[in-house]
Amino acid sequence: MNNNSNNDDFLLIKKAQNGHEGAFNFLMTKYYPRVYASLYSYTKSREDSEDLTQQTFVKVWQQIKTFRGDSAFFTWVYRIAINLAKNHFASSSSKKDKLNISSSDIDIEFKTFANPESDLMHDQSLKKIRAFIDKLPESLKTAFTLRESDGKSYEEIALITDTPIGTVRSRIFRARENILNFISEELDDES
Amino acid sequence: MNHNLEEKLSALFDGELDTNEVDEILDALEKDASLQKKLSQYALVSSSINNSNNIQSINSKKKSTSYGFWFSNAITAAATVLITFVAINQFEFSRMGEDISAKNKLNIAMSSKEAKDIVSKVEENLVDHVMHVINNPDLDNSTPYDVDLRNVGYNRLSSDGRKFNKGEKNFILRIEKKNLGINKVRYWRHGDKIIHVVPLADGRVVTIYGNIDAQSAINVANSISK
Image (cartoon, rainbow over all chains, first blue to last red):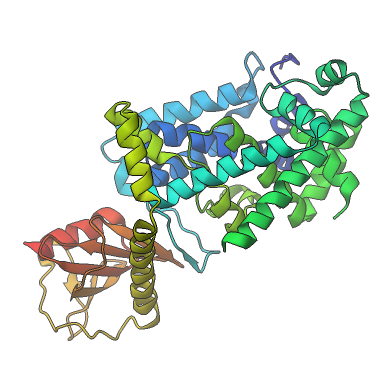
């Protein structure tokens, strides 16, 4: 696999290709929400998106040795996801099986279905979080935004902000912690 | 929780951890559920910030048991509720065409207290109904009925006409005149069973509790509605 700039996950991918389940778990956890979001924008169905996301990662695990690093890992995963979605809709029998996944470890799962009212509230939550990020100390906000929104490497951020890489790493971590704390407090308030 | 480990986790999430430290984090993740949760939260926040028009994880509690993944355990219900940064209303509006004025009006209407109360009441009634079915599967206050489901392959198992089976598939049936405020099929999982709630056009609600899939449940409901 090429160790090119497209692959922040080079080490994890390499390990996963060698059968390291922990490395694969990491990658799956990292990309699950993005794959799910992409599939949702394609299917407009939460249920289909959940099933297809799971199928995507099963397929990723089965095929990860074939990933050569020519593209970003997510791009490769995304292609698998979209192909599965296309096949899902092309197959007349696909819908028959979509509820067959068991969840033996769950006593009860209350499915949340689309309803515009609650969705609007969630959208408002996102706005609140963005507003919170805007209010972060400038040094944290800059490092976090350059990483998350602009995809800059720590080295690039260090150059831009004229700070050591270790400081960049620490600032991004602290920004994340602040955001998660804010989310946790918001949840307590809203529940 | 160890902040040093968490900071390394954050760095690994960004692909910026030194090679010789990666195994330390992967090993810690295997054993530490709170670290797993933290990783999931980083992913959800990252995805949400970068995909504001997309729905994020909803009840992602399914487990990919074939590989023993710990992913599903990592997302708490609380986190998924808040980090469901959904903008379905935006999808719907964009599909209808960009009518900003209509969109604003609808947004105001949907966020009104009255609208929230209605939605909340519907969900409350549904949850009560489903919990009643789970807790009292054999009790039924609804009017006795005599349903023949042989045309869809199900035989009656009990004299009260509420239990049916086809091979290994079996379910308890309830038919009630009840306004649950729904106009489409809803379902819930309970262990290895699923509760399907199907509203009929004549105002009755069919509840099917058993190990049958959605299509079979709909076939049963269609048979009853005829």
